[in-house]
Image (cartoon, rainbow, N blue to C red; front, side, top):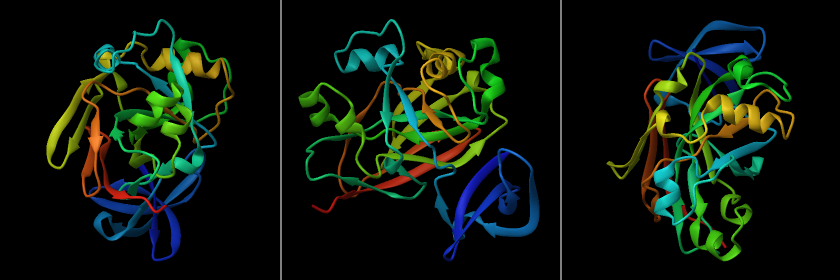
Length: 254
């Protein structure tokens, strides 16, 4: 089932994408909900982030080829960082290049959406706490990352974490195929079997550090092929079975 959040005029709503239409739902997607008869055209609504995570942990260098393309060693344990909730952006939202940076890169990824409060989850139980999966683009101010050697500033600018448009609950992560398309050209193309740490390992590791809450999002890492964006570019992350996340790049305001 594909869940989403959207605006009808100025009113925020939740919905389920069925047969090419968004049907409005009432209640929590994580608990009891009712699908109503009210429906909307997907092209006629303003998409919102499908969830508003309390935290947004991410896995770095989770594909060997990506680690090597940036001249980094392959990690022996999951390498993590956090994006702030204020970086969360939506399908068709604008991604702003900050004045502080001269090189912002796209990083298309599969993201996990947590469905239950959990702590210290064993890998064999990981799928029981996952609500679903969504598309994500981990925008990074690469020049600032190189200067700082840490990830926080480079990953944390407003608009740098678009997710959506949908959360797919009936998705086999083992078959995940992540494609990033820049201005109509495929620039990243990777599959889940190339991950160093798979989904159960990620959930086990992350929940061993912090309590995960419903709606928290975990980015699982990007395949090889990351690259620069400039104002005017349109970047899409497509994962078959989930959907296509589209964002336009703009210059930020000082």
